[in-house]
Length: 64
Image (cartoon, rainbow, N blue to C red):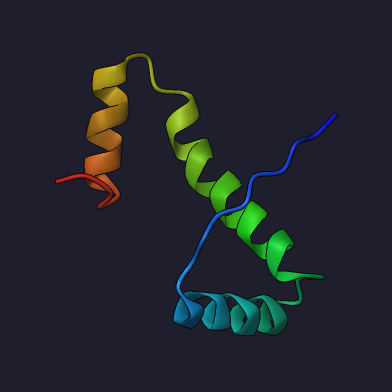
């Protein structure tokens, strides 16, 4: 069974998510968020090591 976790986001971020989800034709902001996260995580899933994951996260701008 799937579990759900609540995440707190700034109001301005939620407003953007709602707007872009509607423009892109998603059925809900949650669907948009899930798709965006799946897309980002897919870029990391085939990494062979933790070091490669770190390099990819740096390349994506998530780590400095």
